[in-house]
Image (cartoon, rainbow, N blue to C red; front, side, top):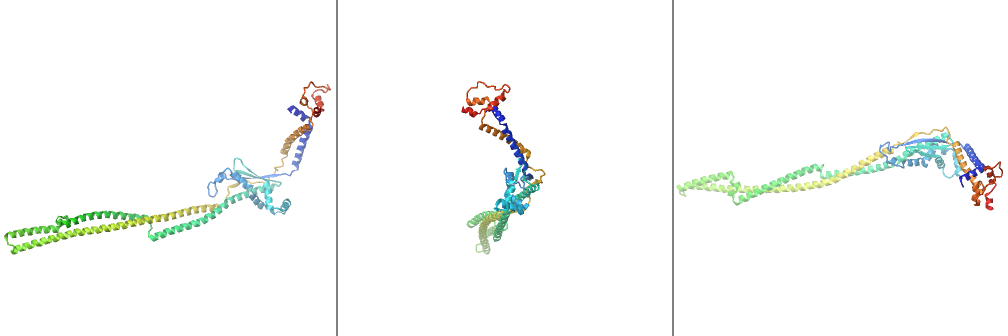
Length: 471
């Protein structure tokens, strides 16, 4: 079908086209005028787009997620919020509402759930595309009622939002309270073990005592080295004094022995002089000889005494070296014991520090969650509260009429084409050519006065394509 054929069909079926448009527009206009007026109230909410908690000042990553706005819309349209709105406006307490509920549901369910579903059916949430503003729209026949419902949804959403945030904080606060008590007991037990260990070992600070004992160990080590050197020297002097006392430097350097040697030398000189002059039996000779013997005996006794004193000194140094060695061994064991004690105390101290650190962290988290659990601050504020609308939002007569005109035009075109398809007529020369499939030689002008397309069209309208196909 060409466009010219379509126009010829539309011209021929113009009454169907016009009547369809007129009926559609008329019905729509009548229905729009008869429908009750609908009012829409809007309450605008501003969500905290910065994502900062008003109590703690911490950034809340949940508000920065792409699905945060959709989640808030789901919360607003939840049945929990609707039930709170029903309770807030006392809608379920009206006897007329209860009677309507019984007639509509035959007493099945609860009136609160029924009212909540009705409210949600007329509720429309429109989040802004590039901002954190959410509009709560509610439609109804009463301007004051729709404004009250829109504001009630905004208020109850704020309360539910606070409740959803506070309830987990309260549970977390109770959990941290129990954990804080357990951790406090752990700190007390660890501190008690450390104090008991210090009392049993009589120490306050291992580090300071360990420094003193280490210095003492170093001093004893130095003393032992010195005592060993002195002992080696004394042993050498002892061996020399016992082997050949006359050659011993200790014996030779003794002033008493030196005096005895001088006196012995003088006495021997006197004895030699007396031996030259006197006979051995002479009293002077005997006296000089007795003096020489006495000095020689005293010299031997003194040399022996000096040698013995050198040996005694060596024994004293040996005993001192053994005492220093024993003291060094004892001090070394004490330092090792202090090292072991320090290690054990370090373990106990670390247990105390670890328990204290865990207790401090838990106490901090407990204080924070306790504050958050007691907070009634919301990150949602009402930007524009709903007011009772003056003009109705529906029905929109002009818009409905325009849409009815468009719809009637489409239906008129459809009905016109359908009527033509049910009773196809010859509208033009091309229709005959399409049906009989033979060339057209010419057209007959039945009336010269009415010749032309109008006369030809009136004639062709009398011809049915069915008859042409039958012939």
